[in-house]
Image 1 (cartoon, rainbow, N blue to C red):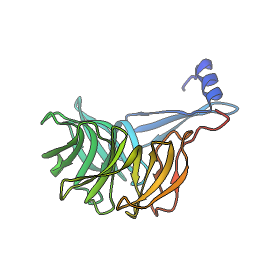
Image 2: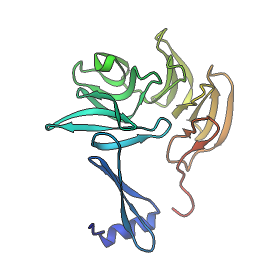
Image 3: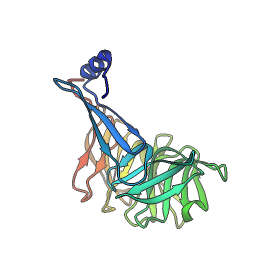
Image 4: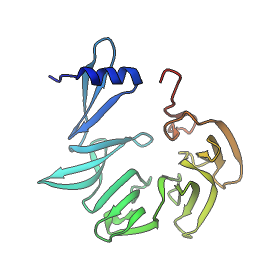
Length: 231
């Protein structure tokens, strides 16, 4: 039985926000309404601490704890895809479609590399791409990825090791079909750019948007969180 503090309930109702957390192998959250209640969901696979869900792929990231030791872990449908005790992860990591590369913002304790990293061979090979890079997103063929660095959106080509500037902005995301990149430009508007970085389409004003745009698996829809007049 969990007791909810009255002031916590009041704050959550006033701000119209939700509260939730991961506790070992369970995701717990509070539902606010006429009578606040606790709900709990068991995550498949081994217990993960600090778990987060990667929407497009369904992968769950977090810390796998065993015998008092922590290791970064990625789980899909209960199966461990990646486990590496040397990785300290910041932000949201991304695993390539073929499962051979891990893209993340963080630090590798073995090599000392930090920033935006590409990890291969289950942690045996670590390549630092940028000190300041963050919010990476893979292309559909795993040959490139888009990311932001100091408010500039860039594409990195793994074969040529060259960077291509897309534009000024943040929160880039590559569509699953590989045709478009979405991001918020320097004027606060969300835009679409084709994979070659040439054609740009304006989507909408993003000044009240609180998250990046998350693509649907078929690349037809976006999901995002926005601040409304009720906040």
